Amino acid sequence: MINHTQNQQQSSPAADAAKRLGKKQLKKLLKKGAKIAVQILKKLILALIKTVVGWVLALGSPVLLVIAGIGVALLIVYIIISMAFSLFPEILSDDELAERERYISIANEYDIPFELLIAGVQIQGSLSDYNDAQLQEIASKLQPHSTYKNITLHSESYSVRCVNGNCTDSSVSKSSKEVPVVDYTEKWDRIVHYDYEIEYGAWNRTNSYSETKCTQNKDGSEICNETSGYTMSRDESYAQIPTETLDYTKFETAFQSPPFNYSTDDLYAVEVFYALTDNWIEYKEWKNGTVSVPGSGSGSGSYDGTVIPGSSIPSEFFKVYMAAQAKYGVDWYYLAAIHFVETRFSTIDPMVSYVGAEGHTQFMPCTWHGWGYPGCKGTIGYVNIPEKDKYKPATVKRYNGYGVDGNNNGIVSPWEIEDAIFATANNLANNGYSKDVDKAIYAYNHSQTYIKKVKEYAKKFKDEASYTNNATPNSLGFVQATTGRISSRFENRTLGGSTAFHLGLDIANAHGTPIRAVASGTVRSTNNSCPQIGGLGNTCGGGWGNYIIITHNINGQVYETVYAHLSSLNVKKGQVIQQSAVIGGMGTSGSSTGVHLHLELHKGIRKSGAAAAETALNPELYVPI
Figure 1 (cartoon, rainbow, N blue to C red):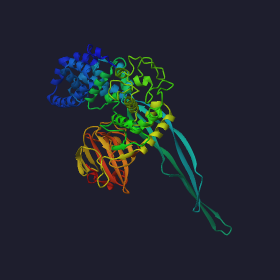
Figure 2 (cartoon, rainbow, N blue to C red):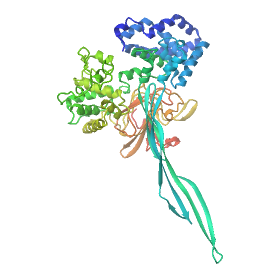
Figure 3 (cartoon, helix red, strand yellow):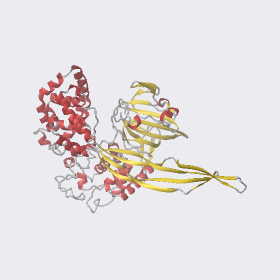
Figure 4 (cartoon, rainbow, N blue to C red):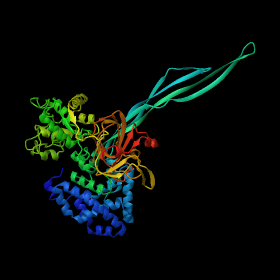
């Protein structure tokens, strides 16, 4: 972390580089082509409004001083250079084009975005300051890395033998083989875990034969026997199901290593310049532990109404669980379960374990204050924190601990119930709760038995509670999916030069706007493997990008709804969802020209391909808009 006192006296890499650029570079770029300059200025204004201003306001006063020192003109120089090298190469000189191609070549070699490499280098100095070996070293730390595992695929076969039309089957023989598959892939901005659905294919007939043998009787007549047969076989195949969790560990490792040695604030600057190239990055949200919550959403598939806890939950704690759920997207019943398993709702006295975990939800001092705290590395998490550092917000911030000042009293203490519950939610959210509950709970205690116990109590507390839905369904049983303007209706439309019938309703609003289930049901299918930013013709997710399909049963009638082009998902395949649950955030993944929800409604199970038109209903006639 940056020492803020020093920050006011010393220049940052961004400031030093900006001074070297000066007015000469700005004048040179603005001279190149009036038409392109207009395009850049349009994007520049939008970038300043949507990205830079929000970023600057969020950084705080120490960094604002640095920005002020650079000056607005030099900030604009930076923005124009980022845009020129990524979006407008036609304005570059031959030498600059060669520099750009060098970065593209190295980025392609290591399968990373060249814009990221340029954004990372730019705040340190000019692009020509680094040779190929240095850039390759950086790129190698950003490149994807996959870990593999084996899955077992089975095969079955049996033979059929027929004599004069009378057939008999042999017993079924089975075999198996081990197949290597990707377990997970670490990318520069995310970790992709892969599950595999394995199922048998259809039976196939092979090795068919047929022959007729005749023998002659003594009287000269013939007796003929027709023998035929074949083999029936089938094989198991697998489908890969990816689940993504945003994780910028590789991003940090690459740019916080030599030759850059960037601070967190420097990485926020890299984020801004990467965003200016029409790419998406959520490093700041990930760093602050807020990325798992779409928009202002509440919990991964959590109930969006009034919840009345059962008698097992002490009433004084329930409001704290709900407040933590709203902030971190971790379901209240899991927070209650951890609180109960750890300290029986704070009734164990003393609330200190034999290894040194303390407080309402039993945090080790190093986990609470941060594993970067001196002496923590190499321990099980216990060091003696002196009073000058203990429970201080500055300590937790400096060493990236999980402690949270939940009641805003200036103390970050595991002995204060608000701080403890909020810190527990913070811990789970940062360890991928929105994608994999078991993984997040395991990171909390590192025990499979602990996971089982917490999930048992979470289910008990959830089932004991009563629920009153604040969103009243219409006469057909549906509630509103989201808010926004209708950008495309259930009708013929022309897009990209071709006309086709649009099977859904498009509702446009801001990135991350909460998407809700229009009725209770079960998640039949999801996709969460697409980049958040798509484009017209993008085929990821079959063109839907990131999507959810939910099967409903309303008064005996089966319906299915499709929610497509999402920025984030809060649910998994097979999960039971209650009406009005926040299931994801609005986005522009897949084949999309802007942020919106593509909502489809089908009577019965949605058919695939062109047959989907047979079941499609006009959502406007059924779902409140």
